[in-house]
Length: 293
Image 1 (tube, rainbow, N blue to C red):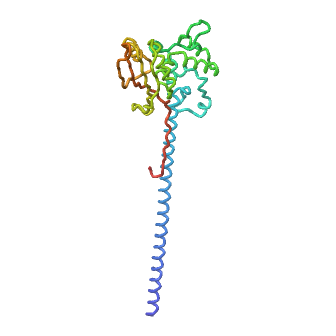
Image 2: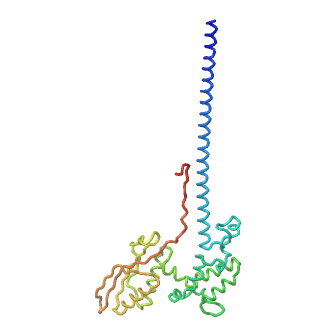
Image 3: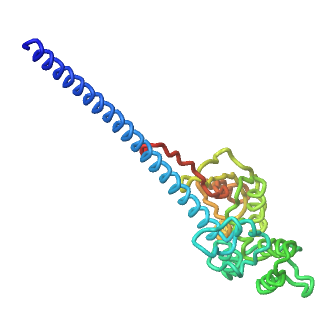
């Protein structure tokens, strides 16, 4: 009887121990499952956050490019906030009449700046190609504008009319005043023309090595020239006055004056002119990594 009771107690203990083991295994399994589920959820959240960051960056890029295209006047204004693929495919900059894109950079250049009377008043003599064959005189801006508007959407006529505006309107003053590249021959020709307008001839005229970044911006550069003249005081005064009135800016950095022969004056100087390299849109690359870094 005692042996039977002991056997029953031992059996119950074994069953309890086995149940505890099952419970421990079940809890352990549940813990592993929960941990795996949490890991999967965290990974999914990270992927979702990363994808959202990429989409946001792409949207910002699309908006930036759309704003640049619209503000420059490459394409007509989009119907929505940004250009669609169809709108970009249909866009042809050479066939767009600037009258249809008011407020853009292109409009301001070809309409407002090109008709500026103040710039036109200091323009150089027009080229032979700027003579209107119908009148025998230089094109007026109203004639240039009418010629452009009459081109309609004809690509070839629009290009020709646009080139005529750039060459024969007040716009031609801008590259004369601030060229887009280093051209020493053109600089010397400009100075020589000032000498001619002053009624004098230079003793020497040559470029120097003192050129480089002007310091006023990232793409403004200097180009220097050395000149000398031997003449009377009146002629030197006229020359300096014409330099001051030149559409192209010249800075006389250093100058020396000495008596020459026959009561003449020797005037030597180092002058600086400027040119600006063309500006362009800066396209940057943004790297996005998971975790917000």
